[in-house]
Length: 151
Image (cartoon, rainbow, N blue to C red; front, side):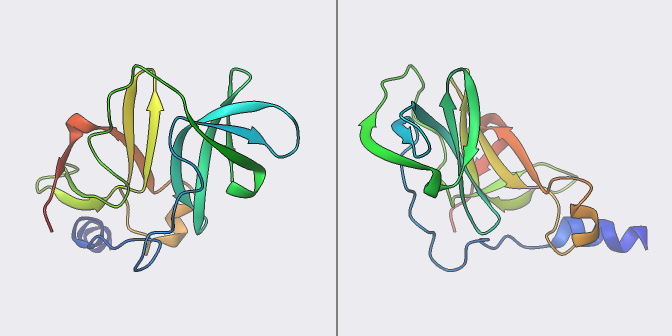
């Protein structure tokens, strides 16, 4: 049984979790936003595909809030930051060295942390639902851990 799980983990192919066309983002990363429940503003420092929608990381009052697009509104004002442009975009196919052979995965999230970019990829198969409850299927990696694949 364990060998079948290992084989499934290493051989499943990458497919986009959002279907054929990637849904548009409500705001850009580093865009200033206003929280719907108050007059407090913050800015978007990341986004991740989760529960069949984009979940946004919003820096507000020295905290990071994880909100759906219904919970804030964009301003079209992008914060100037010393962060370089991300090396990858949402939906890019990359190779990740999880095991003996590199695995292809899709960038499903981007997050800016301390002037660095992190990228979300699935590290375990979505087919293994019973194990998904115990651990997240998403892992966050730096650009040095990923290699872009031309498809």
